[in-house]
Amino acid sequence: MFRRFKSTKPPAFHKQGGSTVRVQSPGVKPKAPKPKESPFVQELVLTGRPNWEKAPPQLKQRYKGIFLVLLSVPIIFITSFEMYQRLEGQSTKKIQQGEKLPNGVNRDFDEAEKYKVEKESVMYKLFGRDFFLDGFTSKTMKVDKDAKEK
Picture (tube, one colour):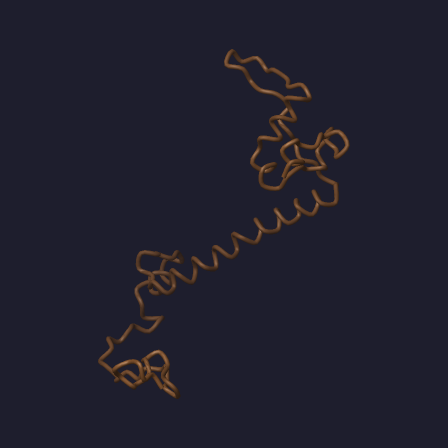
């Protein structure tokens, strides 16, 4: 099969019919305490509060996973709802209307400055123009000269 090599035996990663399961001899395993006999459960039954320092690592990992899943549900729901409203045109993105000067006075932007600030925003750079902005429609926003050349 592989005559140009010194060995005619095929490489180890091309074993045919070989099992990928490794048989391990039963070694002496330390007996883990039964769940009801563990110090974590005993303290939980007595006090009613979990002492996570005594909890086994598998239990900590399981509860951390459940916590992260439950935490992600409202985040996904809120962002999905907001994206749906934005796509339907029912919600508009607020744009920066002005700035606060160091002496504490508010200075309002004119339309050109509002457009410039929006154009330099991260969301504009990622997703392009947002046609649902108040005052910035596809007709009022000018096409970029750079975009035409590309």
